[in-house]
Amino acid sequence: TRYNAQPQGNSVKVDGTSTAHEWEMEGHLIGGYIEFGPGVKLDATQATIPGLADGKVPAKVYAHIAVRSVHAKVDHLPEVMDGLMQKALLADQFSQIEYNLTGMTFKGPHESGKPFAFDTTGNLSIAGVTNKVSFPVTMEVVEGDKIKVNATVPLKMTAFHVDPPAPNIGLGLMRCGDDIKIIIDWTLKNKK
Image (cartoon, rainbow, N blue to C red; front, side, top):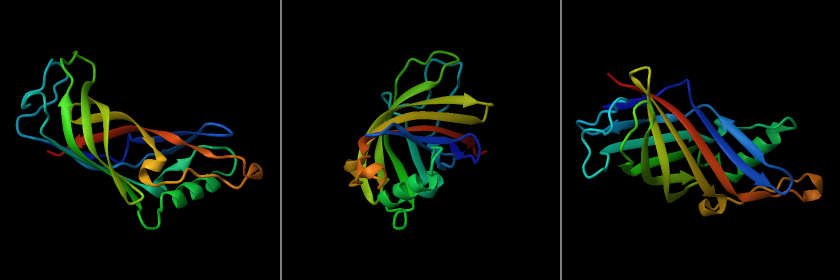
């Protein structure tokens, strides 16, 4: 069963800190797909998922986010923050942030009416550097043929060889922290 990314109902947020204040960036475009192996079916009324092998979910996941589709949520000079971020992420050379799943485990039993919970591992590529990442994911069946995926991914910018931006404002005293959090809300539709 294949689910393809939808143009609506997505959000990617990046939360970070700096010596001056916390900051946030946001975008609404996430491309890609989720493909479940034979027999795997998410049924919101069931306590388990058919088609699993020892709790492992046979699945392929590929997601990509265009670096230039994520923008600063600030009142003052958002284009400055956008430019700093695009420069730090080498957007001219590496226009996409990409994720490929390598493993998914079901955290059951599932409670009726609640999202399904999983532990995942995968390869995340940012600014030309690929790292293994692990994070929990929830999936919820919505409108019958769609799924909504939620994940919060804590990262260090320097793990991807990204220097935390230090904008040339405030006498150069502002510096972004290394730790960021990426919060994903991703809507996909069953490809019939």
